[in-house]
Length: 257
Image 1 (cartoon, rainbow, N blue to C red):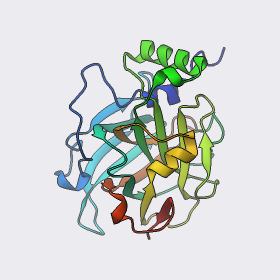
Image 2: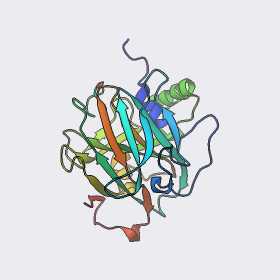
Image 3: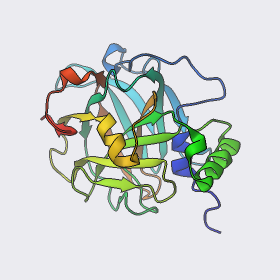
Image 4: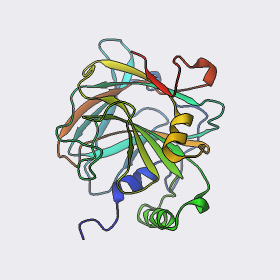
């Protein structure tokens, strides 16, 4: 059997918990508040599996803006950074962030389980009532917990940059119903430039999972090229949780510039 366990999406679900969990924060620590040349404060590295090469992450000064941002460089690799949170989505239902993608990943296609790579991903992890899940999903979660030693969150909502799918496309994971992807950036539009986004993640969660979200228990970033064997370079700006009154665009989400 080629794959005994759909390990990538399942271990993505476990990424917000570790054997010795760091404290949970009430807000996302900005990359811009760090010195360059280090792993950002309050963020922890997570590996997908022990056999996969790790993506390199480092804070750097962006020459165009003078801000400290997070640089990601992947070469046939898949790993990410995460921060534990404890946030009531009703108080801050919107998430804003920035990306700069240098190049697309050749042959990447997140609708194909064997080509699921992306130059940038923003991950949001949620708590929930596991007993409500179908038996198969509960069994997969238990198996992943045995493999990783980590408890899985109830659901993961992921914003991605996709090669082909149009912005707003909802992509189901080929492995588990507890991971859903929404295309925030697509194709070569503004490639190499900073792009700002803002989404109502509560509404996106409802659309993806058909129910309101539980507590937001983690945030993560991930640049991965392990499935296609390619390379990628990308940059992440600060990630900000906002109350509804600060929404800058109507609807569930918008590209700001």
